[in-house]
Amino acid sequence: MNLVVLACAIGLLGAVGAKPSGHGAWQERFITDSQGRALILYGLNTSSSSKYSADGMPWIKQADVAAEYNTLGTDFVRYLIQWSDVEPEPGVYDDHYLAEVRQRIGWYQAQGYQVLLDMHQDVYGAAVGGNGAPGWATDSGGLAATVQSPWEMTYVQPGVTHAYDEFWGTRTDHPEYQQQYVAAWTHVASYFARNNTVLGYDLMNEPWGGSVQGPAFETGPLAHLYQNAIDAIRTVDPNHWIFVEPEAATTNYGLPSALPKLDDPRTATPGAEARIGYAPHLYPAPIDSGGTYSGTDQYLTDRTLASWQTQVQRTAARMDAPVLMGEWGLDATQDGAHLYVDHIQTLLDTMMIGSAYWSSDPGSWSPWKAPGKPSDIADVLATAYPRAIAGQPVDFSYDKSTLELTMDWNDKAGVTGSTDVYLPPGDFPDGGDVQLNGDYKAKWDASRHILSLTVKATPGVTHHLVITPT
Ligand code: IDC
Image (cartoon, rainbow, N blue to C red; front, side, top):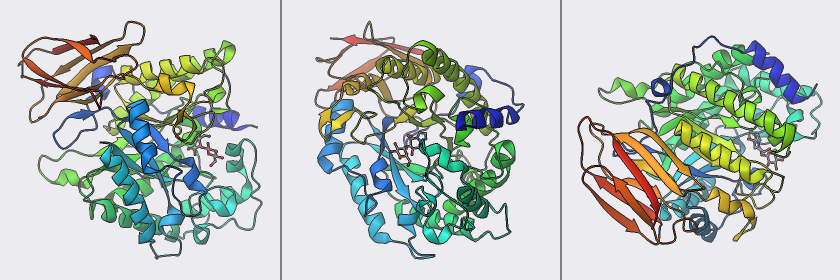
């Protein structure tokens, strides 16, 4: 049985009874900045290389971050960290490692980015052929954990299942590993609590239930861990966003999640909104395995995209959480790759959500052939998008054939600042012409390629914006 079949089987079991809700109903929540503006984040994952490097650092140098901005116009990074690097020995935190992370966050700050810290794991930890958990928190029970190809198949090795079962408390009643994980997150959050470049924390990359799967996992041990981590993080950091992921083996393919609503203790403060986000990944099966976007593969992929949208909207509505697509990507050298990127960007715009592309690591999936050398896909990834919207977004889209960006939004009480749109130099070499109802002031930053619009409130009237190349 391959993992896709496994995922389908779990997905059928996992069909939860939440009603699909309409566009407006679920997407009332956005990730917001300190001025209350809705943020549409767009960036890369950086990086897979840090899973295996001796110091846990990604491949990037400071110049690579500047090159990323100049080439792609991104404003966001999903930055990988690892439990094994944070806590190499039980209860011993490596603050030198965190200082190195902070230095790299500074590189992103210099380019105006927001940083999401992703506690990455694949296949539990290095001791069982993956990455993430430290060896001291890995109990394979002495069972086989042999690395498989494709790598995802390693998840169903018995030693890997055993390690997860010990972590989730399925086999025994030893909650220590989880408690240590929550304590490690609390340490990281207290370290970065006052860092304004940090957007927030992605509590666990692609959680996997081991022996307990589907809704039993997501509503049971996974929700339990998340709520404990949220409660603990809020004792040291009341403000940053906290993102949770569903079980990936189902949801990556557009199948349902059973993740329940989680509570944010910050709402105990009058007027404070919950800052819990939902951060699923998207890897249609043909794309996940490095296939093309053509023929039957394209048909299957398109079916997955439609299903992904429905399921993510259901889960987000149930959780009352804004959505951020934490990973998507493909082997960009395959047939139809450019079209796939276009279609994902259209999906993101339709759903009005941000994303992080997998990944920045130079190679066939990346916008970089080699550090500083853009690949063909870089041009396609560089797209026009609203970075911040000073109000409640209604819709937006970018038509790559007419080079027309359109956007509608309503005023929202308490929101201040400008609405900022990134216009890529390839499509808008001389900036953009603005059509907008009502009074506004436009400012064009030619070096950053950002058009900022300060718009006067128009009570009861929706702002309607069209931007075309000058
Ligand atoms: C992949 C890397 C690959 C590595 C593997 C295992 O590209 O080089 O061998 O991880 O560590 C995910 C994971 C992400 C994967 C990515 C692509 O979150 O870590 O990176 N992917 O396979 N989920 C679905 C796809």
